[in-house]
Length: 491
Image 1 (cartoon, helix red, strand yellow):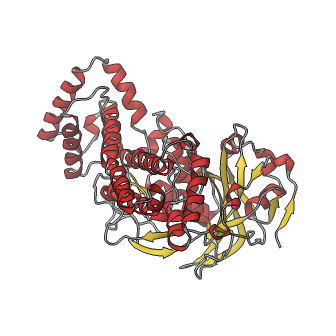
Image 2: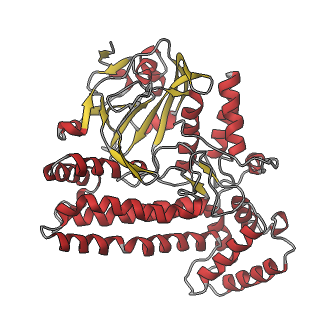
């Protein structure tokens, strides 16, 4: 049985507001204890921002909390229920292998979820063992922290511990638990669960809670539920645009993997694109390309439509009026996304003002990048430092013509070339978590118990816009392979 203990020296400061929702939204239960946990990595800077004592968290009691063997006194562990469209098919889901310890109140007054992922079976496990393997937990740690450093809203990773127990997947693997930090774990799928199996009062209770927790400024709005829908649409338009701008592919954009807070959540079969190709898919199970890089904006709109459907009873008493309000709100998504994306692309090209031809300039470059199989990140880095000879585009007559048009475009703005260069430096990362580098780090950790490769990678990724000499080694491309890179739903 999991022990509860006062741990004041660690800095835990829990509240449990989610548990005050109707009981159907969760099941109270603790994690399943593990045999002999060992701390693998702790995010010291994140711990400090949460008001936690990193040094104290490294002792036995701290590690026992991360393993689920020990529950801080004010925590109230629970597994959350939700539903979702998985590859377009609706399913009842829930935290099948995760437990929400509680909500940490930080020194700045922020409320964040502390969740243990891989902490054992729950009522929503659907036949699974509720556990997670070390490799996927470290992968989420690496990618989520890289996303944070890139300035993209995301859940964070506080710690990874091994459990001292093995899992049987395709092979025998070491078990692990990730401590995930999130603004909340309220998903589109949480609203779908309320709409499918709850009454209108439950939908209203969830919407009111979400507004109070994430969007308190709209509590006095005339139609706060419409304001909620509009704000979630706005945040997702900005989030997906940022994914596209750095070449990130989520891989499994099911509705249960879209956070109402606007954070990137659930790093399963995700990866960053090397060669620019809108059809790029990394997920081993996405055989139809539903969640390909180029489809992500469309899928975000589809998911938001599912969210809007759940809010219809709250938007207006008249169903036709409710549908009209939802459709009008949803019609803004594409324009919001396009505006965010084009603004980001202007920054990547050092452009400060707006001209009608800018979109054509950007798309012409992307078309050439696809044609010549140019690396996405390195191409923009080469443009930043005027090193076009390092790109696959160099020598092509059409690129020379494009480059001349781009230079003329820069000449037509008031800002100096030095200002454009600085804008590009801050908009084009020197490096991303290259797939082969991530696999290299995970292989060393899982197969050899060597975590130094991962820690060096994390250090390089922590300042992606530094463009330092030590980052140069992480910009090189992988060797050519006859097999496309694949990722799996291990997280």
